[in-house]
Amino acid sequence: MNKSISTILKGYLPILDWLPNYKKTDLQGDLSAGLTVGIMLIPQGMAYAMLAGLEPIHGLYAVTVPLLIYAIFGTSRQLAVGPVAMVSLLTAAGIAGLNPSSPEQYLIYALSLAFLVGLIQFGMGLMRLGFVVNFLSHPVINGFTSAAAIIIGLSQIKHLFRINLPNSEHIQEMLVAIWQNIGDIHWITFGIGIIGIIIIKYGKKIHKSFPAPLIAVIVGIALVSGFDLTAQGVKIVGDVPSGLPSFSSPSFDMSVWRSLFPIALTISLVGFAESFAVAKTIQAKHKNYKLDANQELIGLGMANFAASFFKGYPVTGGFSRTAVNNEAGAKTTMASIISAVLIVLTLLFFTGLFYNLPSAILAAVVLVAVSGLVDYKEPLHLWKKDKSDFAMLIATFLITLTLGIETGIIAGMVLSLLVVIYRASKPHMAQLGRVPGTSIFRNLARFSDLESRKDLLMVRIDGPIYFANVEYIKNKLDKWIEEKEDKVKMIVFNMESVTNIDSTGAHELNEWILTWRKSGIDICLSSIKGPVRDVLNRWAILECVGSDHIFIDDNYALSYFDKDVDQSLIEKYSPYATQTNK
Image 1: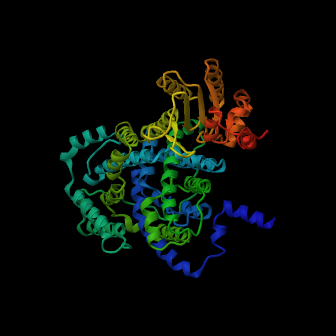
Image 2 (image 1 turned 90 degrees about the horizontal axis):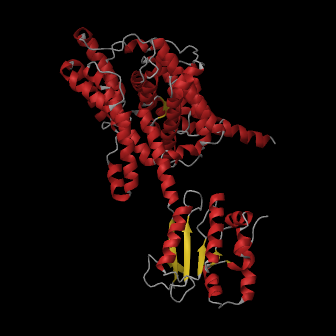
């Protein structure tokens, strides 16, 4: 009993699985990774908060308590949770639609959004709905991510050039605004931004653990302080509040929740998809623990709850930080705890150092981070391999660019579902013929030497028979019967690849059998899976066909048709072909 309780607790509190067995040898890797990611998080957190439309300090708040909470509830031991570019942009896009009247109200909306994201993810985890993210197919995520990265990049142009641009997530509006204001570039700000981009982009080539973003921050602060560039018009972060985040409360106004729900659902799904994808990639390299999609939803949900009550905003697992965390030697989520401690120390003692930090440097952090999200290779790969997936990727990409982030991801999900429905509505069907000299049957369309006959139609349906495809199946069968010049005396349904039959499929199959038999065409069924036999039995189709017309394989069905089989053998194997669960 105690063992059972312990197992249940470890399922909901994965920290109980690794912490009691923590080894001293793991500490070196965790310490190195924790410090490296913590140093990364300082400029990234501040930059992403600006991208989300918040004061930079809220980015640091979002990587304190949420990080600690994920370390307790998450199953990935390397995932680095915190603000990411995609979720930051979604946050800004969602809140902008509510037209907040003040920075304080904007913050309340951000806290409420984090709470809603936590509620959705936590609820999905409890209800074991981790599979829902599968509706975001890889081409959809790829197209959406690439488009969102471009929009994020363009949104930072106003900080890099220091020009006035409207807040928009439509590429056409952003490009027009940039073109109209391009003559107002503040060249000193632009120069600082370019220096930041060069340091961050190429600093890693010095050494993989080189803290390039932090060096860019130090260089930016040094330039502003040393040359008094604020007097030259360079925009800086200014006062960054010190101290730990105080307790905050989201809004529980239902009208606010209703307005934020669509973007909260989008962030929940996109954030989890991004987080779980990178967690799976890293876990495959370790294999000393297991990922649980539903517990990951609970862990991320709890982290977002923490963000909403400690002045943060929605968080999820990030690609770049997780990769760095793993490369720096993280063995457990102790690395995340160490990162959180470093951020806490920064909040307590070092926030004053960021007063002269140029906004252009934070824009450089975001631009370099999102530049790697634009994938040029995948569309080319899909163009060669799968035109329908290519079309889905391009459609999602263009819709996201022109109509906005939220519309793009919803359109992508709808496209994914439509493709699934379309493919399911046209299952693969094959006419079968016998391989000469054997009892093996193969697709007539693939082999030219198979034995086939005008008076026999042997068919295999590869997929379920249900409401969406019955019309397609019937039309295909009628066409094949017609091609045999209406000489068909028997149809043999090979059902080895039929996985399910719904009520519509059962009703139509029954009608086909009765209609064909009235026209003089007999019906046999072969190779039926057990669960499908149970369905056919419930709908009395086995009774309609007759147990003497149900066979264990195609060869017995053909022998029966030719009246060239020992009846005792058919009776011997009949239970294996007709048995059902009552």
